[in-house]
Amino acid sequence: MDMPCELTVNGTGTLQITGNAKHAMNIEGPITINSGTIRILGSDSDGIHGSSNLTWNGGTLDIVSAGSDGLDISGNVTIQNGDLTIHTTAESQRCIKVSGNFTMNDGTLNMTATGTDGKGIKADSNVFINGGSIGIGHSGDMSKGIKADGDISITGGIINITSSGSTVLESVNNQNVPAYCTAIKCDTDINITGGDFTITLPTSNHGGKGISTDGNLTIDGATMNITTQGDGATYTVSGSTKDAYTSACLRSDGNMSILSGNITLNSSGTGGKGINVGDDSHTTSTLTLGTTGGNDDDLILNVTTSGERITISSGGGGGWPPGPGQGGDYANPKGIKSRGNLTINSGTVTVNCTQNNEGGECIESKATLTINGGNIETYSKTDDPINAAQNLTINGGTIYSHSDNNDGIDSNGTLFLNGGFAIANGARQPEEGFDCDWNQFKITGGTHIGTGGATSDPTQNVCTQPTLKINTQPGYAIQVLKSDGTVICTYQCPTFTGGGGGGWGNNMVMLFTDPQLQTGQSYTVKYGGTISGGTNWNGYYTGNVTYTGGQSTNVNVNSMVTTVSAGGGGW
Image (cartoon, rainbow, N blue to C red; front, side):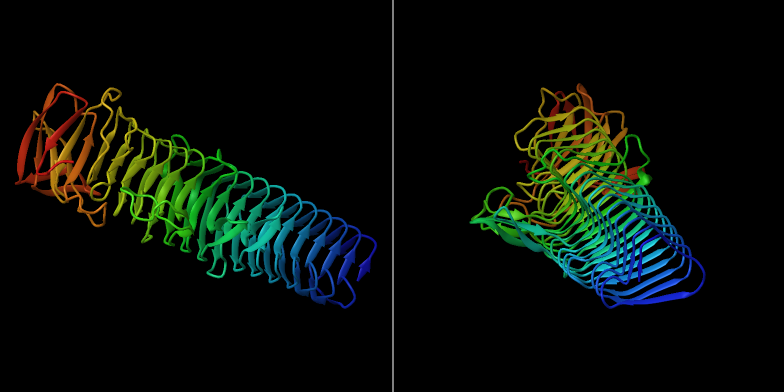
């Protein structure tokens, strides 16, 4: 069907076409579909080929099979309503190919692309999704569900994408570069302020991404459930240089801001990540979670990773003291990782990393990690739940961070506790509740409890709030009281469930600081008793608490760090 002018379709009839020679429909002018049914049984080339704009106001489209693109439109495509189903099978073909903008406001759009490097929606410019329902299944290697060379803006609608293709190594400037099978891919910026997303990358998708952009990604109000299941893999970049590609639920080369929404991310393949921001070529890319002074219920973020790390070159990994063969290179699984600064302002953030080997950190910044607020709970079976490479600052928020085999909260640089409430549980010696090696550890405010086989000592000449370093035993109940009997802290120390360096003993150090601790005052520390009543939050008791039995010791606080013996051997 070849038409040199504009096409408008009205009525309730059915138009059935088979394009044996080339396109099933070739329209040089604008196309407007208001009603009716268009059924394309097959075409040698495009199902519908248009040289201008396409507006779909209603009716039904069923492209059973297209030899090339399902829709190939040189102008803009706008779907206002209707029911569209499109299938393509050829390599490098698209269900919808748009030279301009693609906009969907309502209706139903279902697409299947099975060819290598196929696309569900491919826009040379921008993609706008404001409503309706989009379902995409694409199974070709390095294929994309939605791909825009410009921006992607999503304000509403239901989006369900299954990306089951895998990664292909392409040669670029004599180097191998991975080309991923990705659900939503953008060359510039993605802005999401609404919508209901279900994105699945099954085990056949190795290294793919749920939502990925070369620019910035902003999410401010959406419901998302993104799952990646495929393993990552090592590859040779060129010569003897090796690297690895891994899956990620959310990925950006630029800055990422997740301000509000209900988001669940689950990555179970080797090396898989929930959130990955920046890389070695984008070292200043930042991640922001929540808004300043925001309601913690506005952002619900749950991240789980369970895949093991990938060995790129032989050797060991992190941890201390060094073991035999350490010093290797790995692609590690991460819950939330930012190559640049990471800031948490608000939200309810829960991250679990259940790997059996090292590398599974829950929240990591390769620069500065700042926590200003939020309710944060992190658990890592084998590594640091919270880690920063240069500086870790806690100004506010409520934080629980537990590791079975490593530090509770770890900074490879400086550590500043200025406010908020944090419980950090580490493993046996030499692991620590709060660890910043021998760097500056500054405490000026907040209530903080760190337990482990050891601890970094606060830097006395920069601290303004005193700290008790309590040498005790795992599982002991500790209570700290002022001289007038006022209870400052009632805490049930955890037991050690994992490792540590081995051969370092079983003593526990509890580092405790609170604004009610003041120099020149005396305090009573009870230990080895029993706690009953009250409200228990991860071992910290409040309310109508009763402490019975055990022993006690009196301590005078005359400096910024005071060591207390409470049944432990010390470190």
